[in-house]
Image: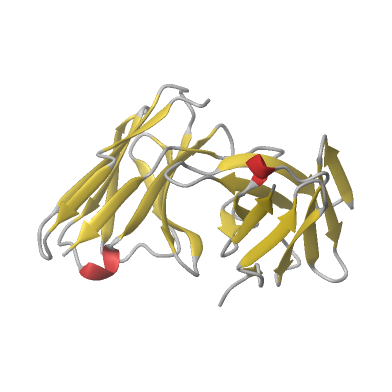
Length: 111
Length: 114
């Protein structure tokens, strides 16, 4: 039973436009949410996080939004760059401290 | 970059053979994790460690065992490899479990069981 879901396996956007990656979760007890980026043949790298007590966190071109009532979070990348092309994983931290990951979304930014 | 290395980086083995993957960290972090990544499943936790000789099971622990005899090393063993264990394996470390933290990942080991 997938507690964290990324329903879009892939996304393609034009350079300079906004990329919006979505993630849904089922467990209201998750207290922290994270986004990781992964390039081929490399390990995931941490991108940005948000506490469940906040609804927005911004870091440069990256903004994460959390809608607790809808159990939904999204990652906005503005403006998108070709170097942003990667697989993006959202993750939620359970009450045991472990991370539960979504399936990932492959983002392609076209020049 | 967090000081995490994994060895080997690639391995092909036959069904039924034992396999050990090694994760080594230079950060002196307390927590270490083993994940596997498969298409359509994202990253799934196999086992984790919260200190030397202290380990616990994750979501997909069947067929795997782990050991941690030193802070810096966390070993993942497949006692008798099966084709369903063909995957990319990632080690991760973190400084703590609570509060604002993130896990840092190693470069991965691609394992193929034929």
